[in-house]
Length: 217
Image (cartoon, rainbow, N blue to C red; front, side, top):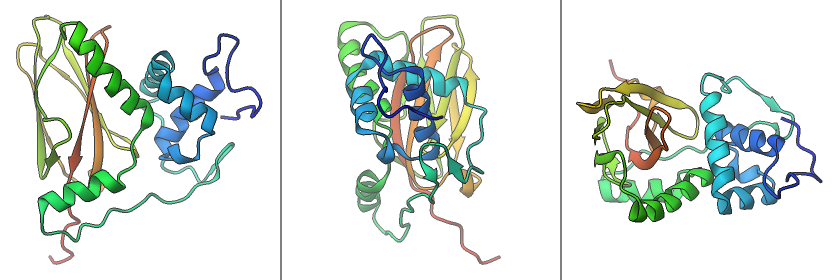
């Protein structure tokens, strides 16, 4: 998406359509650190623009960016940062992941705002699992509770791609996500979103430790 470097905001002072699209491209390509500072800071501080970015990303869930080698704004694309798996302590693994994993600032902003509105409004979905910013190996179990009769949509993604989208029965809103195959679930930071149809999503994040399988047969 081509963005006019001199015009990144609309007349109302919010991100224009091109800037929102560029931010979504940056999320899908793991290039948040190469966004223009004006776009990055505005999304970090503006909840409405953060929500618009989230909505567009959801609409583009089926778009595959993995084979893209060039981008109109970012130019030549580079490989992702690798996280070492040579650890023997889960505590040190979690610490390393927190230090090295690439965050998605628009999600971080929404998570901060979520703390505020949860203190004011009763959430329509109660989260029993996963725990906030916990480290998981092999699998992560999701368990939600709601008094609504609407199904719960659950989405999980890392900085490279969406790894899960499923619909849960409101009477038993639970799901066990296995970290298999390895290539789809590398060690790192993952975000999850859960929402009732037409409702405001709730977000969370967790970390995955999934060492590369041994080459031995």
